Image (tube, rainbow, N blue to C red; front, side, top):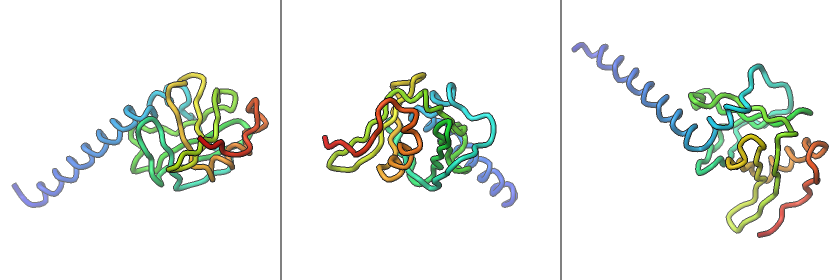
Length: 150
């Protein structure tokens, strides 16, 4: 087999392996479950915070997520290399069933749960969580002021 064919086969194999791996992560973290209800069909218009980290389910998305807000809701999207199985999400503010600042000895974050899939929890870092909460306070029942120590 010529070396060019070996390189081409290796590249194709890696691309297929990568897509399967990233797609599996989307199922294991709950992203795909959220996407069934909250997949974004068009472009997002609003304030964006790029290269953010979030926790979803058991998984961490470190530095590859764009978190956005506008008057209507919350936007989450992963960077292109991590997109297989991860369509952009848009959750209307009215679908946020639980929003709580949580502080533990190992970190602080805003924990969100949504009406259609309450068992999937999304955690945003406290700094970005405060910005998200500020944009959403007009929609959430009780305003979120400060992280609560636990």
